[in-house]
Amino acid sequence: MTAVRTVACPNCGGTLEVRAAGLSVNLACSYCGSLLDIARPEVALIEAHDKAARGFRLSPGRRGTLFDVEWEAVGALRRRDSGYTWEEYLLFNPYAGYRWLVLSDREWQFGTMLLDLPEGDDDTVTWRGERYTRDGEASTSETTAVLGEFYWRVRAGDTVEAALYERGDTVLSREGGGGEVNWTQLVPLEDGTVAEAFGLVPLKAKRAVRSPVPSPGIFDDLPTMFGLACAALIALLLAMVLISGPVERASGSVDAPFAATREGVKIGTLTVRRPWQFVTVTARGSDFDNRWVDLDYSLVDRATGQSIDGYGIVEHYSGYDSDGSWTEGSRKGSTLLGKVRRGTYDLYVDAAAHGWPSDPPPNTSGWSSLPETVSVSIEAETGALPWGNWWTAAVLLFAFPCVAVWRRYREENAG
Image 1 (tube, rainbow, N blue to C red):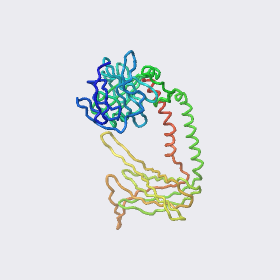
Image 2: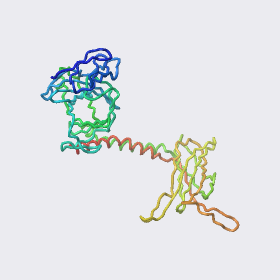
Image 3: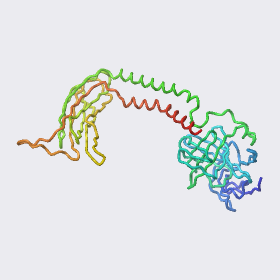
Image 4: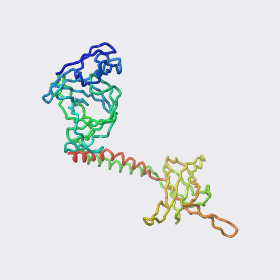
């Protein structure tokens, strides 16, 4: 195909042939695995390895004809990201230049470097009038093994930021690193075609495809998936109601002072009759504005003296600005005390009121100076439902079918 250049490995003394002489700058020694800089007349040792990279499907030096062009494999890379490992082979023809063969999860792709670059954003790009949609999230790819020669400086441990964009079977690969971005068009090739071209033994039946796009069978099952998710949520709600147990209530009130804290006000007594239950404490403030009340609850077990503590707040603000009148906050607030064991409990509260933007001055009456207070009624009850857990279960149950619907929408619009 072209004249070759012969060099000696400075590490082991092995004789190597440079197939793309004048174009390659890196060469991996096939004897010891050392990485050599051959861009200069004197070959420099970049990195020495204990053993050469092994296990590549296509070894450098093999020749084969694809798309009516005879190619020689001059270099091989093994790369990985967070979830996959694959191999990339650099092909060379002195008249056609360089191309890539990529082997990922027993599937081959033929790659051509792009000179007319795609345009777009991180989600979609347009190339030669056709739109491509990103497949999955961008990831960091690391080179783990190098064999053969390359037209740029490459070594194990190099990383690039990579993203894939799909349109049907065609993929555009974007790789960024070292201050530059490279694009490659990848089209699928049958394993039999590659095996016949390069004299390889055909691979066994391929495993599941790498792409995370849900299969048509998953799309067909979407109604069933949503139905099962709804049924599971209903069953979970019924179970929560059954185990929540009998309801008991205790209520009272507290006058929260400004510039002080009213401590240890007893609201009432509750009995938890299940092995454990949730207890909800609900506070409702009287008609107040531009005020808030901090409430510290203590549910004290009469038998042991141990307490379960919680915090609540009621607040309400209003005002007027250039956009008109506004309000914020709520005069009602709820606090959930979780996994209260069976027993009898007294509920105590510490309350302190605050004003916005500052506390109001005390009211003067006769000989005494009494601070203004905010009255708050408090009710506690057993048998509360943990709605936060229920909503978390809802998000988890519906996450996969919702993602599948979104992926199908993307695929249909990309086509």
